[in-house]
Length: 339
Ligand SMILES: [Zn+2]
Image (cartoon, rainbow, N blue to C red; front, side, top):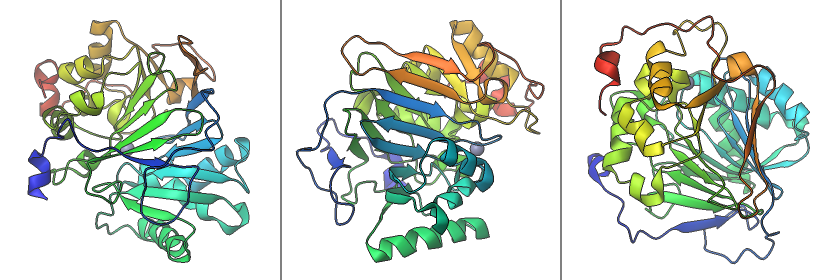
């Protein structure tokens, strides 16, 4: 595991492609995507789930859910709204084993919803949480029946490769990257995900769960900036806008035009921290936040030069919230650090 912490991704690393139109079981294989529909619209919804994360992605009929928020009932309302009952979610990624990211996902496995899940990625870290054990029992039961492929984010393709590239039917790709191996904080076990639109020049999104300073610095030292690259039009703000989840260097690497924070309107953490918003303001970056704007929807047509739109359910960009405060965390002193 220690070796993983210092391993750089070689530029010649082989990308293992899971074409999610193909078999749900067995080892990942490289395929020609015979069912690809050509470039089509990519829709990303940063769902309003309160203090937590849940991001739903659709492209050409392929569906991906990254995290599920803290509450099964809340995610359930989104599943109803999105018309997913009786349907298939191709890929689920749990960024890390914290309740505000995984717990809502238990709703996916409620038998009366009849939702199929084809690939389920998580770090499989030991946890005392009984709710996580319940979720894992559901995942393992389906894996045992052969209806779901259960992947460890430390080995996301099951081949030893440090990233797994998933091709969606409409031409978008999703890179699931190996997280930092042995950080001090469970937040720093967050799995980074890079979403690339069918037209990569129009839209890329970077999402890294609750990654904090140690993981953020590791993304840099692991060479993720070079491969697969971290530059993105839109960034999901790390760790709900904690000052611990943003640094000048990190923002320079991702260089987003927009940042979307997912958080609850009355959170006890002081999110979004004022230091984070100050970093964004200093760069002229715009943001939306689910506590003030509800679900935030990003669309790109997928055709060359089509660009993208970003639309909140309500409210204006660059809002502040009632829980926002200056964080006294030592790590956030001195202008946000350099990590
Ligand atoms: Zn979180």
